[in-house]
Image (spheres, rainbow, N blue to C red):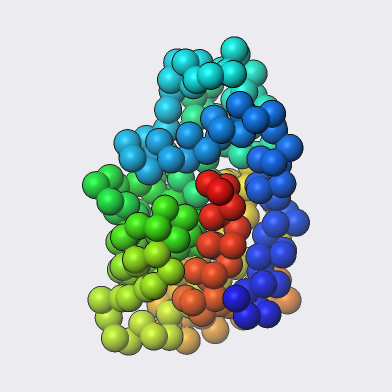
Length: 217
């Protein structure tokens, strides 16, 4: 990971320190959080409260989910079920990821890029440029990336480093976007040059892997 990617990782970890929050959980709840992520990757959906209540050491699934939501590790819907657990979202987002045999949505561009290294799997990301709307497809195997368009060697990931307000899923995550080429990246960055940073695809993958892979370790 180069210095620019490391700076992005440090910024993101300061805003939403998922790994540190997970380490602070009781062991059974830490295992339950990992099971939420692993289960979503297998089933294409989050486990229910009933699923979690059957896990060893989870006597109160509502208490577990309330704690995870308070720590911004999951997002809950009106019924109290899981609607998001970084990097996954049950909401329809601009970032659709085919992960093994399932199709899921990622919270943001960085989250989409993190799934392949996180699960050491093959993925296909279907998204769009945040400026032009141009469709983008990225395939990955672990940390390796490829695109279906030779011109996307100039593809960038943009992050608007604004403080998170409420759940990161509904604030910062919406400011992590794909940008199709140098012109789109320059246009996007010009709107808030001091707060917006651009990352190559490789840098964004390294950033996302460093942030998410420890959650399953």
